Length: 359
Image (cartoon, rainbow, N blue to C red; front, top):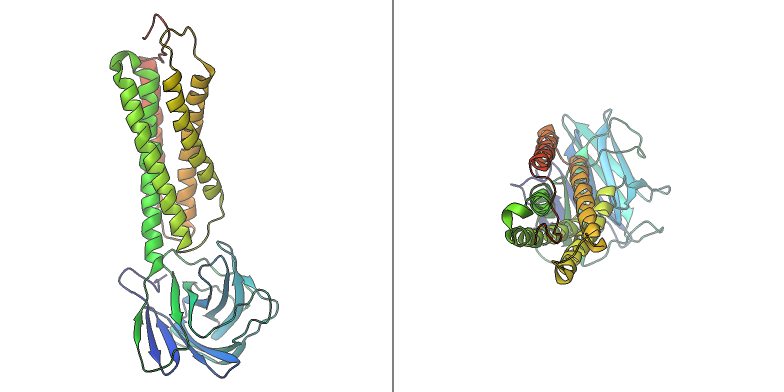
Protein backbone atom coordinates (compact mmCIF):
# COMPACT_ATOMS: atom_id res chain seq x y z
CA UNK A 1 0.00 0.00 0.00
CA UNK A 2 1.23 3.52 -0.81
CA UNK A 3 0.76 5.35 2.47
CA UNK A 4 -1.16 8.59 2.54
CA UNK A 5 1.03 9.97 5.31
CA UNK A 6 4.78 9.61 4.84
CA UNK A 7 7.85 11.16 6.41
CA UNK A 8 8.08 13.64 3.56
CA UNK A 9 4.40 14.61 3.69
CA UNK A 10 2.85 16.83 6.34
CA UNK A 11 -0.92 17.21 6.19
CA UNK A 12 -1.92 20.64 4.96
CA UNK A 13 -5.25 22.14 5.92
CA UNK A 14 -6.17 25.05 3.67
CA UNK A 15 -9.06 27.27 4.63
CA UNK A 16 -11.23 28.43 1.71
CA UNK A 17 -14.55 30.25 2.13
CA UNK A 18 -15.64 28.55 5.31
CA UNK A 19 -14.41 25.10 4.26
CA UNK A 20 -11.32 23.09 5.13
CA UNK A 21 -9.56 20.65 2.81
CA UNK A 22 -7.23 18.16 4.48
CA UNK A 23 -4.80 16.84 1.91
CA UNK A 24 -2.40 13.92 2.08
CA UNK A 25 -0.22 12.47 -0.67
CA UNK A 26 -2.98 10.30 -2.18
CA UNK A 27 -6.28 11.41 -0.63
CA UNK A 28 -8.17 14.40 0.67
CA UNK A 29 -11.26 15.32 2.67
CA UNK A 30 -13.04 18.65 2.18
CA UNK A 31 -15.46 19.62 4.95
CA UNK A 32 -18.01 22.43 4.69
CA UNK A 33 -21.26 23.48 6.36
CA UNK A 34 -24.36 22.96 4.20
CA UNK A 35 -26.64 24.83 6.60
CA UNK A 36 -27.16 25.16 10.34
CA UNK A 37 -27.95 21.45 10.63
CA UNK A 38 -25.73 19.54 8.19
CA UNK A 39 -22.08 19.31 7.16
CA UNK A 40 -20.81 18.02 3.83
CA UNK A 41 -17.68 15.92 3.27
CA UNK A 42 -16.08 15.51 -0.16
CA UNK A 43 -13.77 12.50 0.11
CA UNK A 44 -11.24 11.65 -2.60
CA UNK A 45 -8.77 8.78 -2.65
CA UNK A 46 -7.17 5.91 -4.51
CA UNK A 47 -9.22 2.84 -5.32
CA UNK A 48 -6.52 0.79 -3.55
CA UNK A 49 -7.15 2.54 -0.22
CA UNK A 50 -9.95 3.23 2.20
CA UNK A 51 -10.08 6.75 3.60
CA UNK A 52 -11.46 7.62 7.03
CA UNK A 53 -12.13 10.96 8.70
CA UNK A 54 -13.90 11.66 11.95
CA UNK A 55 -14.16 13.37 15.30
CA UNK A 56 -11.92 12.32 18.19
CA UNK A 57 -8.53 12.88 19.80
CA UNK A 58 -7.54 9.25 19.12
CA UNK A 59 -8.96 5.97 17.88
CA UNK A 60 -9.96 5.15 21.46
CA UNK A 61 -13.15 7.20 21.03
CA UNK A 62 -13.91 8.31 17.50
CA UNK A 63 -16.96 9.01 15.33
CA UNK A 64 -15.65 8.34 11.82
CA UNK A 65 -16.81 8.12 8.22
CA UNK A 66 -15.04 5.47 6.12
CA UNK A 67 -15.10 5.36 2.30
CA UNK A 68 -13.58 3.04 -0.29
CA UNK A 69 -14.14 1.95 -3.89
CA UNK A 70 -15.04 -1.62 -4.82
CA UNK A 71 -16.64 -3.12 -7.91
CA UNK A 72 -16.90 0.26 -9.61
CA UNK A 73 -18.90 1.81 -6.76
CA UNK A 74 -18.02 3.80 -3.65
CA UNK A 75 -18.89 2.27 -0.29
CA UNK A 76 -19.45 4.58 2.69
CA UNK A 77 -20.17 3.86 6.34
CA UNK A 78 -20.30 5.66 9.65
CA UNK A 79 -18.50 3.88 12.48
CA UNK A 80 -17.48 4.20 16.11
CA UNK A 81 -13.88 3.40 17.11
CA UNK A 82 -12.72 2.14 20.50
CA UNK A 83 -8.95 1.82 20.27
CA UNK A 84 -7.01 -0.98 18.55
CA UNK A 85 -10.17 -2.73 17.45
CA UNK A 86 -12.18 -2.72 14.24
CA UNK A 87 -14.38 0.42 14.24
CA UNK A 88 -17.96 -0.71 14.81
CA UNK A 89 -20.56 -0.13 12.10
CA UNK A 90 -23.39 1.99 13.52
CA UNK A 91 -26.80 0.34 13.31
CA UNK A 92 -28.37 3.72 12.50
CA UNK A 93 -26.41 5.37 9.70
CA UNK A 94 -27.04 9.11 10.07
CA UNK A 95 -25.29 9.65 6.77
CA UNK A 96 -26.48 10.49 3.27
CA UNK A 97 -24.54 9.90 0.05
CA UNK A 98 -25.08 12.84 -2.34
CA UNK A 99 -22.87 11.80 -5.28
CA UNK A 100 -20.12 9.27 -5.94
CA UNK A 101 -17.93 8.17 -8.84
CA UNK A 102 -14.97 5.96 -9.67
CA UNK A 103 -12.54 6.94 -12.43
CA UNK A 104 -9.47 4.85 -13.13
CA UNK A 105 -7.47 4.53 -9.92
CA UNK A 106 -9.36 7.28 -8.09
CA UNK A 107 -12.72 7.68 -6.42
CA UNK A 108 -14.70 10.61 -5.06
CA UNK A 109 -17.79 10.65 -2.87
CA UNK A 110 -19.83 13.47 -1.36
CA UNK A 111 -21.72 12.73 1.85
CA UNK A 112 -23.70 14.76 4.36
CA UNK A 113 -24.07 14.17 8.10
CA UNK A 114 -25.89 16.05 10.86
CA UNK A 115 -23.78 18.55 12.77
CA UNK A 116 -25.37 17.29 15.99
CA UNK A 117 -24.91 13.86 17.55
CA UNK A 118 -28.17 11.90 17.28
CA UNK A 119 -27.10 8.74 19.14
CA UNK A 120 -24.68 7.74 21.89
CA UNK A 121 -21.75 6.74 19.64
CA UNK A 122 -21.86 9.95 17.60
CA UNK A 123 -20.02 13.21 18.24
CA UNK A 124 -21.09 16.77 17.44
CA UNK A 125 -19.30 18.87 14.81
CA UNK A 126 -18.74 22.19 16.55
CA UNK A 127 -17.76 25.70 15.55
CA UNK A 128 -14.20 26.30 16.69
CA UNK A 129 -11.13 24.11 17.12
CA UNK A 130 -11.84 20.42 17.61
CA UNK A 131 -9.85 17.15 17.50
CA UNK A 132 -10.15 15.01 14.37
CA UNK A 133 -8.65 11.73 13.20
CA UNK A 134 -7.65 10.84 9.65
CA UNK A 135 -6.47 7.45 8.37
CA UNK A 136 -6.03 5.24 5.31
CA UNK A 137 -5.57 1.51 4.75
CA UNK A 138 -5.81 -1.21 2.13
CA UNK A 139 -9.19 -1.44 0.40
CA UNK A 140 -11.38 -4.41 1.41
CA UNK A 141 -12.64 -6.45 -1.56
CA UNK A 142 -16.32 -5.98 -0.75
CA UNK A 143 -19.23 -3.65 -1.37
CA UNK A 144 -20.78 -4.37 2.05
CA UNK A 145 -20.68 -1.16 4.08
CA UNK A 146 -20.50 -3.00 7.41
CA UNK A 147 -17.61 -5.25 6.33
CA UNK A 148 -14.30 -5.49 8.16
CA UNK A 149 -11.54 -3.21 6.88
CA UNK A 150 -7.79 -3.89 7.06
CA UNK A 151 -5.95 -2.02 9.82
CA UNK A 152 -4.07 1.10 8.82
CA UNK A 153 -0.29 1.25 9.22
CA UNK A 154 1.41 3.27 11.97
CA UNK A 155 2.12 6.06 9.48
CA UNK A 156 -1.26 5.86 7.74
CA UNK A 157 -3.07 7.97 10.33
CA UNK A 158 -3.08 11.41 11.88
CA UNK A 159 -4.61 13.41 14.70
CA UNK A 160 -5.60 17.00 13.88
CA UNK A 161 -6.52 20.03 15.96
CA UNK A 162 -8.37 22.39 13.62
CA UNK A 163 -11.42 24.60 13.08
CA UNK A 164 -13.48 23.07 10.26
CA UNK A 165 -15.79 26.08 9.92
CA UNK A 166 -13.52 29.14 9.99
CA UNK A 167 -14.50 32.71 9.20
CA UNK A 168 -12.50 35.10 7.06
CA UNK A 169 -10.12 34.71 4.13
CA UNK A 170 -8.04 31.72 3.13
CA UNK A 171 -5.35 30.80 5.67
CA UNK A 172 -3.08 27.77 5.13
CA UNK A 173 -2.60 25.77 8.32
CA UNK A 174 0.20 23.24 8.75
CA UNK A 175 -0.72 20.22 10.83
CA UNK A 176 1.95 18.09 12.55
CA UNK A 177 1.98 14.40 11.67
CA UNK A 178 1.60 12.63 15.02
CA UNK A 179 1.86 9.28 13.24
CA UNK A 180 5.53 9.91 12.62
CA UNK A 181 5.97 10.66 16.31
CA UNK A 182 4.25 7.38 17.11
CA UNK A 183 6.50 5.32 14.86
CA UNK A 184 9.69 6.93 16.16
CA UNK A 185 8.57 6.57 19.78
CA UNK A 186 7.67 2.90 19.36
CA UNK A 187 11.01 2.14 17.70
CA UNK A 188 12.88 3.90 20.51
CA UNK A 189 10.75 1.99 23.04
CA UNK A 190 11.64 -1.33 21.42
CA UNK A 191 15.36 -0.57 21.16
CA UNK A 192 15.63 0.43 24.82
CA UNK A 193 13.74 -2.65 25.98
CA UNK A 194 15.91 -4.93 23.83
CA UNK A 195 19.15 -3.46 25.18
CA UNK A 196 17.87 -3.60 28.77
CA UNK A 197 16.47 -7.15 28.76
CA UNK A 198 18.32 -9.00 26.00
CA UNK A 199 21.79 -7.52 26.58
CA UNK A 200 22.29 -5.96 30.00
CA UNK A 201 20.05 -8.24 32.06
CA UNK A 202 21.64 -11.60 31.05
CA UNK A 203 25.08 -10.05 31.59
CA UNK A 204 24.05 -8.81 35.02
CA UNK A 205 22.76 -12.26 35.98
CA UNK A 206 25.90 -14.20 34.99
CA UNK A 207 28.14 -11.66 36.73
CA UNK A 208 26.27 -12.21 39.99
CA UNK A 209 25.81 -15.95 39.50
CA UNK A 210 29.09 -17.16 38.04
CA UNK A 211 31.88 -14.60 38.41
CA UNK A 212 32.07 -13.72 42.11
CA UNK A 213 35.35 -15.65 42.65
CA UNK A 214 37.05 -13.88 39.73
CA UNK A 215 35.77 -10.34 40.16
CA UNK A 216 35.86 -10.02 43.95
CA UNK A 217 34.06 -6.90 45.15
CA UNK A 218 33.78 -5.75 41.53
CA UNK A 219 31.06 -8.31 40.83
CA UNK A 220 28.74 -6.32 43.09
CA UNK A 221 29.78 -2.96 41.68
CA UNK A 222 29.25 -4.10 38.10
CA UNK A 223 25.98 -5.82 38.99
CA UNK A 224 24.71 -2.65 40.70
CA UNK A 225 25.77 -0.31 37.89
CA UNK A 226 24.12 -2.48 35.25
CA UNK A 227 20.98 -2.79 37.41
CA UNK A 228 20.70 1.00 37.58
CA UNK A 229 21.12 1.25 33.80
CA UNK A 230 18.45 -1.43 33.26
CA UNK A 231 15.97 0.37 35.53
CA UNK A 232 16.59 3.68 33.73
CA UNK A 233 16.19 2.06 30.30
CA UNK A 234 13.03 0.16 31.30
CA UNK A 235 11.25 3.14 32.85
CA UNK A 236 12.31 5.42 29.98
CA UNK A 237 11.09 2.86 27.43
CA UNK A 238 7.79 2.47 29.27
CA UNK A 239 7.32 6.25 29.28
CA UNK A 240 7.97 6.37 25.52
CA UNK A 241 5.51 3.55 24.87
CA UNK A 242 2.86 5.14 27.05
CA UNK A 243 3.29 8.56 25.42
CA UNK A 244 3.23 7.00 21.95
CA UNK A 245 -0.24 5.67 22.66
CA UNK A 246 -1.45 9.06 23.91
CA UNK A 247 -0.57 10.65 20.55
CA UNK A 248 -1.98 7.77 18.56
CA UNK A 249 -4.17 4.98 19.91
CA UNK A 250 -4.60 3.25 23.23
CA UNK A 251 -3.13 -0.23 23.29
CA UNK A 252 -5.10 -2.88 25.14
CA UNK A 253 -3.05 -5.97 24.42
CA UNK A 254 -1.16 -8.81 26.08
CA UNK A 255 2.03 -6.90 25.31
CA UNK A 256 0.83 -3.85 27.24
CA UNK A 257 -0.40 -5.89 30.22
CA UNK A 258 2.80 -7.94 30.44
CA UNK A 259 4.80 -4.74 30.04
CA UNK A 260 3.19 -3.26 33.15
CA UNK A 261 3.86 -6.48 35.09
CA UNK A 262 7.52 -6.39 34.00
CA UNK A 263 7.80 -2.71 34.94
CA UNK A 264 6.45 -3.33 38.46
CA UNK A 265 8.63 -6.42 38.90
CA UNK A 266 11.68 -4.47 37.74
CA UNK A 267 11.05 -1.76 40.33
CA UNK A 268 10.47 -4.31 43.10
CA UNK A 269 13.61 -6.22 42.10
CA UNK A 270 15.72 -3.07 42.34
CA UNK A 271 14.30 -2.21 45.77
CA UNK A 272 14.90 -5.78 46.89
CA UNK A 273 18.51 -5.55 45.73
CA UNK A 274 19.08 -2.39 47.77
CA UNK A 275 17.52 -4.08 50.81
CA UNK A 276 19.67 -7.19 50.39
CA UNK A 277 22.82 -5.08 50.29
CA UNK A 278 21.79 -3.34 53.52
CA UNK A 279 21.08 -6.68 55.24
CA UNK A 280 24.16 -8.49 53.94
CA UNK A 281 26.01 -10.55 56.56
CA UNK A 282 29.45 -11.85 55.44
CA UNK A 283 29.34 -14.48 58.23
CA UNK A 284 26.12 -16.11 57.03
CA UNK A 285 26.09 -19.90 56.73
CA UNK A 286 23.18 -20.21 54.31
CA UNK A 287 21.46 -18.22 51.60
CA UNK A 288 18.66 -16.09 53.15
CA UNK A 289 15.14 -16.13 51.73
CA UNK A 290 15.35 -12.59 50.38
CA UNK A 291 18.41 -13.51 48.32
CA UNK A 292 16.59 -16.52 46.86
CA UNK A 293 13.57 -14.32 46.08
CA UNK A 294 15.88 -11.80 44.40
CA UNK A 295 17.50 -14.52 42.29
CA UNK A 296 14.25 -16.01 41.02
CA UNK A 297 12.35 -12.76 40.63
CA UNK A 298 15.20 -11.47 38.48
CA UNK A 299 15.31 -14.56 36.28
CA UNK A 300 11.55 -14.77 35.82
CA UNK A 301 11.23 -11.03 35.13
CA UNK A 302 13.98 -11.22 32.50
CA UNK A 303 12.35 -14.27 30.88
CA UNK A 304 8.93 -12.58 30.83
CA UNK A 305 10.45 -9.43 29.34
CA UNK A 306 12.15 -11.41 26.57
CA UNK A 307 8.83 -13.05 25.68
CA UNK A 308 7.18 -9.63 25.72
CA UNK A 309 9.73 -8.24 23.28
CA UNK A 310 8.60 -10.93 20.82
CA UNK A 311 4.97 -9.97 21.45
CA UNK A 312 5.95 -6.35 20.83
CA UNK A 313 7.35 -7.27 17.42
CA UNK A 314 4.12 -9.10 16.60
CA UNK A 315 2.00 -6.14 17.76
CA UNK A 316 4.07 -3.69 15.70
CA UNK A 317 3.81 -5.91 12.61
CA UNK A 318 0.00 -5.85 12.91
CA UNK A 319 -0.04 -2.20 11.85
CA UNK A 320 3.24 -1.75 10.00
CA UNK A 321 5.49 -3.61 7.61
CA UNK A 322 8.11 -5.54 9.60
CA UNK A 323 10.75 -7.63 7.85
CA UNK A 324 10.82 -11.26 8.98
CA UNK A 325 14.54 -10.73 9.49
CA UNK A 326 13.81 -8.98 12.79
CA UNK A 327 12.20 -12.14 14.15
CA UNK A 328 15.08 -14.28 12.88
CA UNK A 329 17.73 -11.93 14.29
CA UNK A 330 16.00 -11.80 17.67
CA UNK A 331 15.68 -15.59 17.78
CA UNK A 332 19.36 -16.05 16.87
CA UNK A 333 20.41 -13.52 19.52
CA UNK A 334 18.39 -15.31 22.21
CA UNK A 335 19.90 -18.62 21.10
CA UNK A 336 23.42 -17.19 21.44
CA UNK A 337 22.59 -15.78 24.88
CA UNK A 338 21.27 -19.15 26.09
CA UNK A 339 24.32 -20.94 24.67
CA UNK A 340 26.67 -18.48 26.37
CA UNK A 341 24.89 -18.93 29.71
CA UNK A 342 25.17 -22.73 29.44
CA UNK A 343 28.88 -22.61 28.56
CA UNK A 344 29.60 -20.17 31.38
CA UNK A 345 27.68 -22.34 33.83
CA UNK A 346 29.72 -25.40 32.81
CA UNK A 347 33.07 -23.62 33.03
CA UNK A 348 32.27 -21.40 36.03
CA UNK A 349 29.58 -23.00 38.23
CA UNK A 350 27.38 -20.85 40.44
CA UNK A 351 29.08 -19.33 43.50
CA UNK A 352 27.39 -17.82 46.57
CA UNK A 353 28.58 -15.63 49.42
CA UNK A 354 28.84 -18.05 52.34
CA UNK A 355 31.20 -18.04 55.33
CA UNK A 356 34.45 -19.78 54.48
CA UNK A 357 33.83 -19.64 50.73
CA UNK A 358 33.53 -16.15 49.29
CA UNK A 359 33.79 -13.38 51.84
